[in-house]
Image: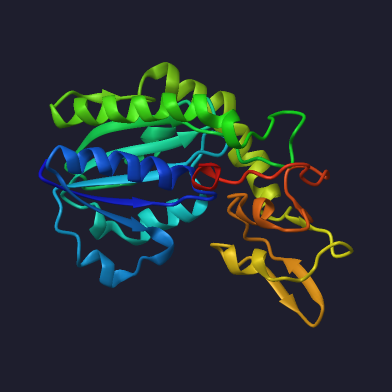
Length: 264
């Protein structure tokens, strides 16, 4: 591997953090790296890909990829064709075969060189009874472990070691039957239409509409509403200054996830 291009989607910054950490270590090892956010990507960008390896990175929701990343992969096959592939899944704790999902979608890849899972803080701010939101010093231990793992795996990949997390039969079974089957077919479609915005406390500042990667939130004539195209990234929920938005719960966030960079 001499040149690497990384393409990623990051809802609230976790995946972006992991991708940039990996690329910083790859650069130290003498590998030329370029990083592309798929929200800012167009067909012109694909012409800049002068790489032998592509790293594709995304968060995991219920052992599944965000729809925005699936669409990107399917709509931009030239990004991956004929190149080695590294997949990176950021997760709270477990995603089964999360890191292998992109490889299953991408055709004509040269080889699936590595599948990686990195545990990072949760951003699900409206489900405090299930997962506590942590910020500041409370996320330091998780970040230290993540940073150590990223540094170690980068070295192993550079030295030719095969890293294949989430590709075993157990991981595939657990990812599909324990989580993804229920999430994909019974939960995701409902949540896609389930973004709730409390108009009584909303200040109509427009932050949610501006930050949504799907263009899912509209503000007009003193009204705010969500369409049926949420990708479940939790960006708007954690950025709303009035804490007026929720998704999986009727309860609005008590504490919002600030993101790794803002916790520094």
